[in-house]
Image (cartoon, rainbow, N blue to C red; front, top):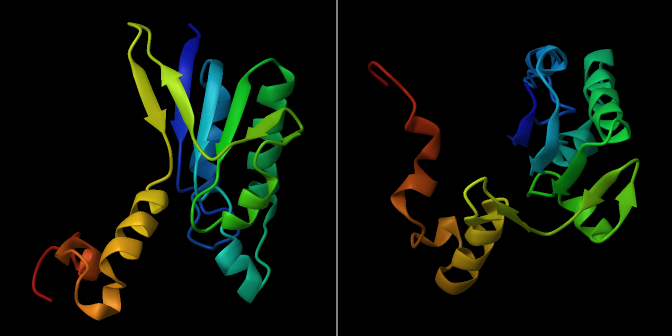
Length: 152
């Protein structure tokens, strides 16, 4: 069975918390015609502070390039943690297209905008101020506590 499309986001290669091994299980899944890499695949912010790149991170990159070589269309849409790749918009490397956003057409013909959420956040901050100004939505200010269970 072949998949039409896969969406992968927030992998954060280059960080110790990246779950590269889980993504490598993807090898055992059927191929996809199109793979969207929707932001923060690499974590350039972390890599700027210190290099962390184990073999499993190389393996993820090689696996994606192999899928491109086998005919999958791979679209990389940079996010805030891999924003350095925005300097490469419109380029292709190793079978990977780097784009600001894309329009995906579903099996039933609907058109879906594929973009990383930081572009909306940047627009919101431009219009409303930074999270430090007190004008950010509550979910942005306390996002780190939203997933907590039990007493704080």
